Length: 93
Image 1 (cartoon, rainbow, N blue to C red):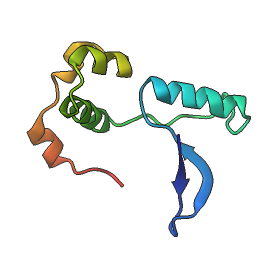
Image 2: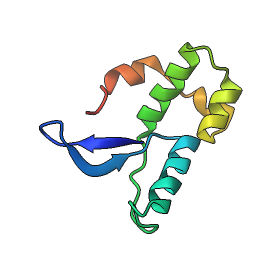
Image 3: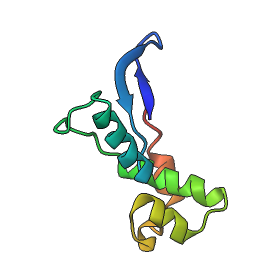
């Protein structure tokens, strides 16, 4: 979980929660601390951002099974990572 920063790098009081099991636990914590309502909409991670995360973990030496378990996806989902596709769509800010 990390704070969302405004134009001048000041905290906005809102938070961004990275994907995966840690995302779920961080959301639970925000709700428990009453910093987020149970019914508040949660923005989803873009598939290309998720594939970039798969690629990063793979390059760090994690196996396909462990990566799939972290993101609650099948091992086949990781096979969809395509370097050319990732290059065509630059990272969002």
